[in-house]
Image (cartoon, rainbow, N blue to C red; front, side, top):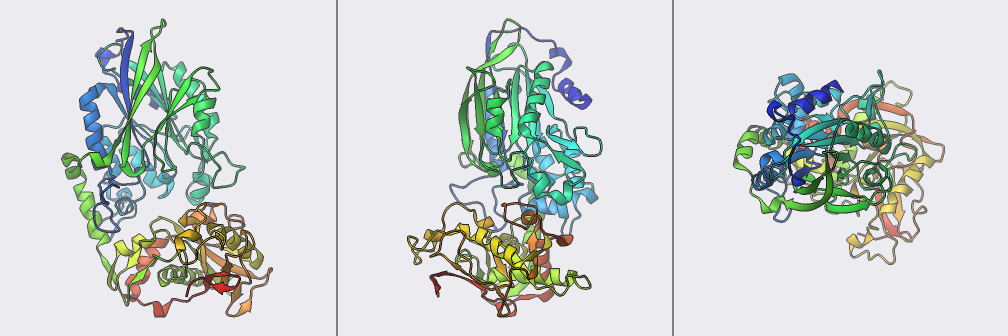
Length: 585
């Protein structure tokens, strides 16, 4: 809390620290971004081109929007905040965290983290931890926190060893409202979804604990009000509401609406995590009857910022209170990239371009993921083959060495492609876009059957779905990254049957896999940690974990062999059927 106090003092020049006089009404502006995920430029490193018209994004465009708001409202009246998931998501942030053939990670090189450089240049006043801040480990996160000028908040994260807050829970920033008048003390409370203790268990277990967001908000909002905050903004890296993607016995994943309605003293909740667009929603406070709380969510990747003009009124106690708000969503497509910002980040942009353009292999033919949701395609078998080989080699000499190895992977991007001829790191990264690590667990045949039944919820029933129109087979309830497909075991998914009864016999090399037979299942750390709530996998015995980045393993295989030929690894082992008849040739 000493650190928080220091930030409060630093936020206001001494000559203005006691300026509490002024008019009865005024306006300040809250500008927010969320889920930037390393998108500094409006550039898709997987396709090697700017994003498509209508899908513009990136902090370089957002920088122009922010500058316009400051010019219009006056820079001293604007508070700029980031709502988390900032340092992971593009090859640029991967190079910063892991390095490349020509550069070391920032934890070794001593360079400032590029996302900290960007946020510092734009003058962010506060930021909150997102769950993806933990993906690269606590050393990298610590480096980012040290490099960032703004306080990095995490009010529901505690140090396991000491029981003390691991990050500052709140800060107070002073803003001069538009048109003059007394300074406004804005309390900013930061909270993050507890899912990190599931999704990044290998990085945080035994070191950090993640508490209930609503309970933490009740404590910290009271504290920041007691410290003199006129206005309270909660940065909630959490979806608005809905079920958690992990064990429901843990604190809720999506708690922003609950914070807005159940915590007294909250004026605005900035929402993130869910990658939804929701610039303005007003909720009735249950904690303070008659009060409405604003919930605002900018769009992800810097595709928009929200600019909220908070209308303020002075109370008899000589404090400000919020009496209304006007919200404007500024979309990236309406603004050019800021030239000075582009120049600032150009060295990292070029470094990333050099990295992703590196040729790693030659493909014998074009391999595409276009149909990967409907049929077993060779490009997915490339992932399976690498995962199975790495795990099998790692199990040599262990009690599990003789067990069959089954691989799990999902089609992350339908537009992923290995072109015929030269294949680059960008092509491989476009197939495997997440920074997952490889793990393996021991499961039984019965458990594997349950696992596949759960994955098969992705599909609609046939009929009424039209097998001639593959898109109609998607039931619309499961994202593509939760459509797990298996290699090393053969099976049919019968879409004429209802959910929960679609998977027939599982066979390995023509032999039926019995319910009690054991197999080793290669999975990514997200799935093994409980992401997606697939049955059994999170509690199954862990038999392999060397913290190897799966995308890196794919790149290494391509570089080692120098060629990608489906004849070396492709094998059709699953298919969609209706009453036993294949839906596709």
